[in-house]
Length: 329
Image 1 (cartoon, rainbow, N blue to C red):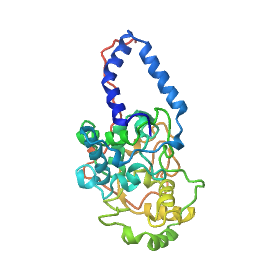
Image 2: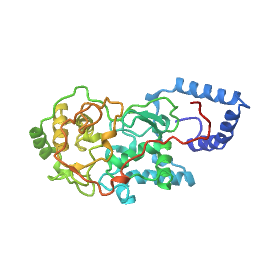
Image 3: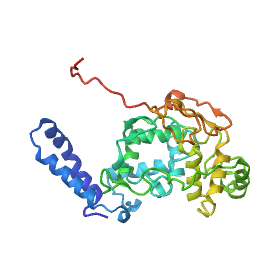
Image 4: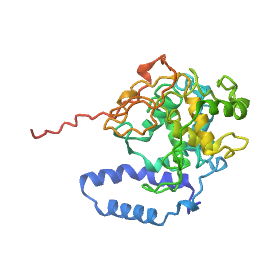
């Protein structure tokens, strides 16, 4: 790991932030911010991602901060049980972000704390990490926006900071862009996909695709929404090829993974309110299954299921406030 325990570093750093920011704004001490920037740049330059390992659950400190981290971890593991009003599907965060968000081939969450805020082309805006978490709640979990100021959101963010310990700002780990891109973009066949699904997937997800208490629904009202990355054929194929079946991941061919992805995503699933405003500047990936600016739907599902609370299923773009400064016209 690193020279000092992560929580010690965090506690040493956080009390200094308000003063440092104030001095920077007042212009009374330019040396300290410059030194901090140099230290950050030096740390990033010497960071070797291949040698980095996330801290384990056993390393969570036994104090108040550790309690928040542990609550955040359990929220990832037991999302619908803990937050049924916000995670309304049968999926939990770890359904996709496997190994508690640390598996490189399953959209890892490690390093996320060092990557945000960042520009997101789908939303056409710079968003913070809490907004990114809420995109998962509203789209992948087909649920509702978790209040950013809530204790539960802060617990989740505390856990994400914990598993991002010592990753410098601006440096990416393996899997930082999400699911690993497939080398070839293939065309999935629904008939072949159904045959493979019956052979390889029904033991966990059941013949009707509705899963059980341990495994999530893959379609229907309790599954992920059309706005989730998993509703895209290539993204789903990547997850399937790298991680499924759980008893023998990697046993399918890429073509078989695309076939299963096409079959799964051909079924009805929850709508994603506001999806038509995605990629506001255009340039949506070719496999997005709904219409956006300059993009026609790619193999959309059989039907979309209305959400019970559509007004709570949209993550608002960060608003601009009136700071009170006079503007030149």
